[in-house]
Image (cartoon, rainbow, N blue to C red; front, side, top):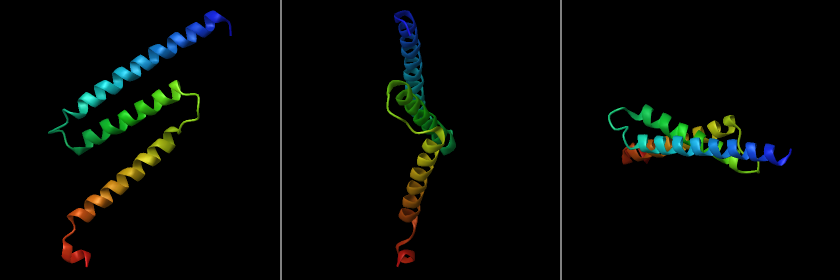
Length: 97
């Protein structure tokens, strides 16, 4: 690639990173306003934010990143652990003996 092509690619990369930053900011702000819309809305916003952050890493870093499926699997495992912890907290003490 010549200098002009490199500059054009970098310009597009910077524009895309700016769009991702704006999207992440909007999602983060949206997370503060989900009260009354249920847990599903919040979960979707959190998942969307995770995808935005992973895309930012994929564009900004030269190292290998997770595939979308790997990210989804990781997020599902984290959610499963959180659900298990929540169930254990809500289980009456007499059932745990």
